[in-house]
Image (cartoon, rainbow, N blue to C red):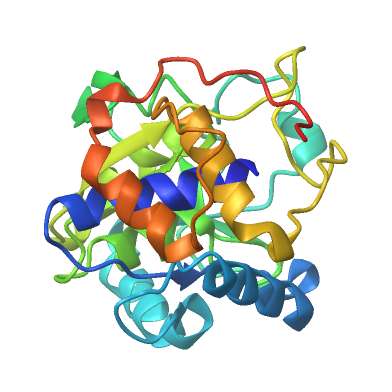
Length: 271
């Protein structure tokens, strides 16, 4: 349900602006990526009438752009062999390997960050400010196992010319500053970001597979959309029976991003 709430908010927000809605599958971590997961996502979106305005995009098709970016950034990169265990007690990366500019096959690649504030306006959270040197430090752009980091891949994809707005969950807001830093270094135009509050259990735990959140029943798509509207503060009528398409049209008429609650109602199983 948490993922559906975010998808519905993203869909309605861009449609209200008269824009096109695109879906991208982040599939650049093969050990965690399984084809059945992608099929479940796309089938769920289709059953809820959340149809994207073009082919579904896959990050795994963009590797040449990611590696080209590494080449462009090479003067700002260094090779780091610090283990997670060695860094476990530090609040931010201490710069241990900053002088290691020679390639090492057993190392991750990090980018040097500057000690300057980075600001952006979030349409839901307001004015945000980060200092990467003090909040995380030099971050990884290519992992030790050779995989491209989420920060680099998403910075390039979100900085594409056809992307104007990104609405996603609040759990990703701390990834925004590194992505904006990379976009600036690469000469890309950042989108307008909006980070929606997360749907949680009563104890504040985020709904996820790890917390045993119940899967959506796609056979009850209309009911699911009504529930999503409830969490988004749209006050849907409980007695109204509509198709998924009709529910989305109902939501679009009433959509205002400003109306999203600062804290979503607590998730609960409902009849």
